[in-house]
Image (tube, one colour):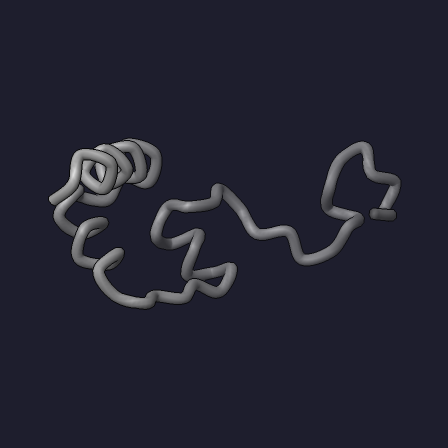
Length: 61
């Protein structure tokens, strides 16, 4: 595995809580995440369903 790919797997592992081996296996093929899947995987902390949920936005983009 290239240095860069291994380093990226380690960084993603650190931030998502997934094992580096899982990250490596998942990155070897196309994998698409919807918002809920990304949350379960650890890529995001929460899913915003409307602009009104974002503080300070006044409900507009």
